[in-house]
Image (cartoon, rainbow, N blue to C red; front, side, top):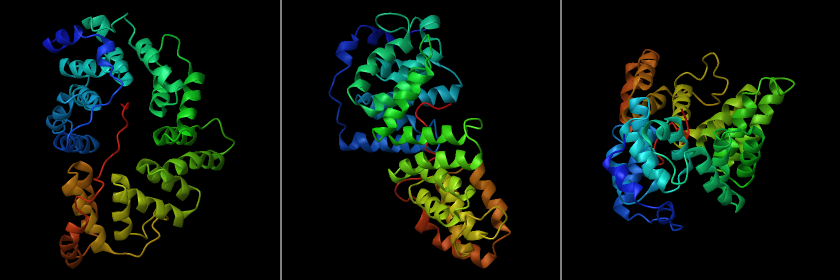
Length: 331
């Protein structure tokens, strides 16, 4: 199962590869990586690979990991290409790449094992724990996943490190704590208490600039009846490039009075909403954006659609780019 790449890597020691100095990418390589990550954000798993390969070949470990993700998702499993990229990232110390290798049975099925054993989660733990104890928020956050993978999973330890990461300013960890509270149907007395607990963490992450939390905070606030503030945060999510936030913004401009649109605290402007939808479909083509255009087309007059077409450029390719903000260690 080993490729030529793996044979080459096997001759390198982990100590040599785990340099304490991050490689700085030159301007051209960084631009390629940025383009690859933009495409990752909109689930373009084939198109993202050539630009990310440029970064990976320059030593960027994050690019190696996401190339593994792209190939895994395309093949719906640990393909040879996915294994090659995960192994490279793992050899450079990426703990989530190690967990992906474990998930795919790389050691048992392909003899692609850690240097000093056969336990990828344990290798990830031994590498990551000292960094977390030294105060690295990314390492703290990674321990949340790692502790669910070790031979004796420890949810209490996982949650301890998740909270420590959040307290250290790691917005993705804050968001996850918000999700856990929102989805906890048994730990709270009622829905209001549950949503208020989620609001605390979503607000912290939203105020830290994390677009998915802006989106989820808006939804929670709307369920709590705080519609004006919900609209403010959904608009901010749109400005931050969140695809759902942008779709909500468009829908609210077209039909703010529709059932279930209490969040839409804005004046009706169908041409503007149509412009946003057209731009979204151009930037992120797919079944959902095309369906939205079909659904709303008849709600807008031909004159409003023409005006929207003229306004579309104002909403196209804004910074930051639109994204689904997929999680690093997601499905």
